Length: 205
Length: 205
Image (cartoon, rainbow over the protein chains, first blue to last red):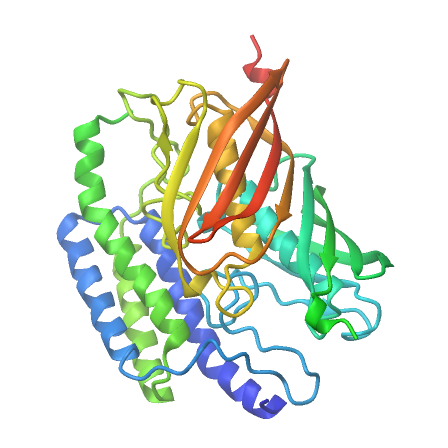
């Protein structure tokens, strides 16, 4: 458990660092510099990595916010503020976690998430929707749930750029929570999702 | 169109560079170095990015292999050899592209792909399966297809480490191709997928 203040302090250190790695990923795809410059860049990156790994924390122990009980998403590839793979989604819970499971996120999906030219990869749409439906079904990850089944209907391609994901609980039936959600680009809904999330037996009381 | 030889030359330059960025992503999640060292690392990364973006190629024009007609996956977040977000999957087509659409890939999913502690994020399983079902349905991306619907059934958590994804065409009905696939960890199948892929109207002849 860590306090809000300590979490904010950590974000101020790690968020700009991770954003710098995100820009490096993008530059690595786009660059047309010559082989010698690529080799120099590689050596510089390896030097940075060597310094970073001299001290490692135990990242598999999930820290939680002492006030809200919500896990701190450092590693997660959808929302992790310390994971350069994550866009990251910053998920807003309407009325707060526990207030019915409706949530949304607005974020950017650029070149590193490309499938067909100019469009977001369908599997990235699936990653984003799986994550936000899961957050919705578990009331902001305060209640453990595992994905049972998820179905994604692709209405059309999702344009690269600003997107919005949202999810809500449709109904609850025993240990099953039925969540629904959508992904939208500037022109409207592009992907619809339905998920069944199951409360694990160890969490049933 | 580029030749096999030119593609191999490019891989030799870009693959080790992109692997270095992948190790940096992992180190950025694990590191416990102090704030000053993080700030120095950030500045070094920003310096590398600045040099890389001085020359940029037009990465949205899809290059194809002159011999096989298959696109070269530089950017793709599942298979892109120049995209540090991609594991990357290296997809093998049994009997070659066009020989029935059965394909498989064996690769590693480590810490940057983590959802629950020690397990792969369900949305990453979805990304991987969406991609390989799509390759299967389009015979190695030689025939254009878009995902219509995909359903993922999560049988249990997927352990981090070596995984295997496979996909095959179940049946074809007019413009619809029905593909199926599985993701497995060391202990067997963890996720099953069913997808309906649709040939776009501009590609129907």
